[in-house]
Image 1 (cartoon, rainbow, N blue to C red):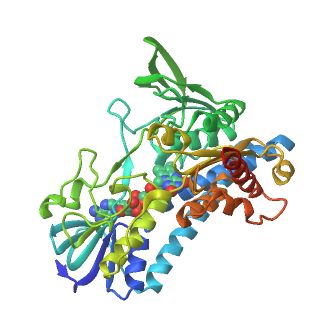
Image 2 (image 1 turned 180 degrees about the vertical axis):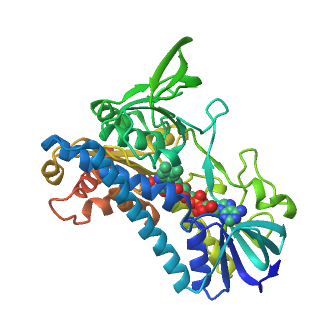
Image 3 (image 1 turned 180 degrees about the horizontal axis):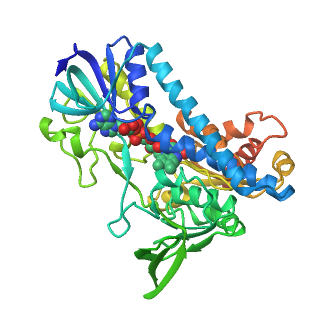
Length: 461
Ligand code: FAD
């Protein structure tokens, strides 16, 4: 066993939480090491955000070309997988380059905490220990496996679903959350007959029904069969197919397909070999680590960020916390403020939300005024043939300060940033309405929605 010299900041895990933390720590002048047991870039780069968005974009292009030409589906899918691999490799290479340029020591292997200031790193039979002054835990999450549906053979998690080498003829998705919808619709656009089974009353639970409706319409237009209020029971695998038995309204049904994809949530990587028990760091019943507003755990020199902490399991939340944690270690007063974390579903049409929704405002008796505008008559949306959807802004009815916004429609993923900035800056709907937006652009719909809220506030006065 070899012992490395000590570092000021040790980061465990190199996803969008870990690598950003390591970069910021090094930029702030601290000697930093990062440990990764798999591939630099984490879930996001290899089996999450990046490969899924690459394949989704390819599925849209395939769908579009198919409407003009009779193109070869299997060839297109092979090209899509090649395209995805290229992007993933480029991104992973970028992470490595940035870390190296910042002077971060990159250590390969599985990290196990031995005590509050020592980590053991194991890789291919080799062991080394490293002592650290501070640690940032960023070990991320993995798909939840249902006992009745262990990932093997024709039962897939999102990881396997992103790496199929051929377009399946049919696919059953268990779970209508954002990953199930994104991957289900992606395969539907490649021509797969997709069935989505959701336990709740609507897919994309958590988003308001009026926002989800245009997505459901498009899913149906893409040939996706959505079954809500359904509970998956068991699966029988054959050589070429898998049959899923499920119940709905106390009736038993079954459906057969090439594969079953299970997307029922993710589990934090706080168990296993990480060794939290050696340092006495507790986890909640969900396996999450509790932290304060500087991402500090109950052990003051140990921080936790990303999917292993409470809140939405999203890459940008992990990266945001990463900067706060590294800055806290450097003695800065940075604190997290979660009032403006955007959520995006890369469905067709896209869906996004930030801050307070109308439903939440009602439930919590928060006073609000709604400003709404549709993409239907927006010049740019018309030119793009993407007129489905609308933008909703939630604002304080007295001051006009923006407290939330939701979008369903083209480029909702990009447009939401303006509204996140508005919340972050304490901007009012009048600020948005009086900001000169270039014409003809989709951003004008934000201006219209804000103007709609301003007019409602004037009427009230
Ligand atoms: P991770 O990215 O999970 O990285 C953790 C890293 O730690 C891993 O590389 C792991 O190997 C390593 N590790 C774990 N334990 C150890 C150990 N003991 N020693 C050494 N290394 C260890 N989020 C978005 O914001 N937008 C999206 O569009 C989006 N799409 C997604 C699509 C899919 C299909 C999936 C599965 C996820 C998606 N996500 C998306 C979620 C996003 O990927 C995660 O929220 C994000 O990756 C979490 O970052 P993290 O840094 O906490 O951990």
